[in-house]
Amino acid sequence: MEGSMNLAVIASRAQLGIQAPPVHIEVHLANGLPSFAMVGLPEAAVKESRDRVRAALQTSGFDFPARRITVNLAPADLPKDGGRFDLGIALGILAASGQIPMASIRNSEFLGELGLTGELRPVRGVLPAAMAAHQAGRTLVLPRGDADEAVLVEDVDVIAAGHLLEVCGHLCGDAPLESHPRQPEGTDDDHGSALPDLADVRGQPQARRALEAAASGAHHLLMIGPPGTGKTMLASRLPGLLPPMSETEALETAALHAISQQGINTRQWRTRPFRAPHHTASGVALVGGGCEFHELSLLLKFMGFWHSYPSPTVRDNQWQARRLIGFGNFPWMGDYGGCGGWIATTHQRVAPPLPGWRYS
Image (cartoon, rainbow, N blue to C red):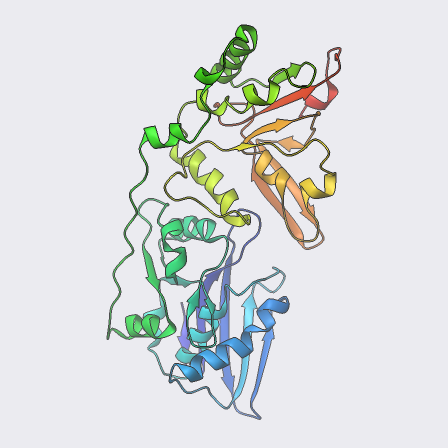
């Protein structure tokens, strides 16, 4: 981070799909009538941070500068949403006004939403930010509620705090915080016990053999039969036949969970997930509207179970979802490595070839 008198620059991360592009929070204090302007394509929740930051600084015992404050979130063409920049904005104001040393904010990135009392509250999508911070060689400072998720990235340096005063005490050297330790993971038995076991199925020898062949070769699978013959029961047991996920596969899968509303189970984050949306779900319900990426994002990475024939556009093992604000790239692992795949069912006989299964 760079800084000079009346100017401070804080590093942070935005959220764009499972990517975490860097954002520089530039805070400038100028003479003139007291005001607080924020630029850089902030959305409503980001604009509201001016009130949260002002109250958090005052209730924490800091002086809020009675000057003309300008906050720029760069790059200006990248949309910013949520309260993830609150901590960075508050520290930028403190650094620009000389209340914390400039040198203390170098080589660190800051994420976190501020309460009016200065409390740090968790934000969504921390895991992609932790991966990006680790690649950049920087320390990630964030709320304590997000620390267990962030340390899933091996060797990442995470500083967790519960209050703005704790962060400032750490940066000033008065009360240094220790790096957050990585939590113990569940054993392979724990991961396996969370999945339905194919041994529970009685009969169905041909279907069982087809599942074993699909799992061993990472093939797609089409089940044909009337309702009640066990298609869903068999399909839900396919993930239990697959080998454990590698570190890269597990992190990509956990990153999709991190940006969704479900969150991550840090004890079983290596367990292969299984998605089974209802066959009557509309395209809008799957793809999502506005700026979100919903069920289809999870399906294209996880073991997907479908009642029809999906046809996403996939190139170079990536699929791209576009919105008015931009686009997001998501990993596609359905064609190799045994990481993901499609299981489709139908009540009708289908004559090959199936056009919907041609992905490129």
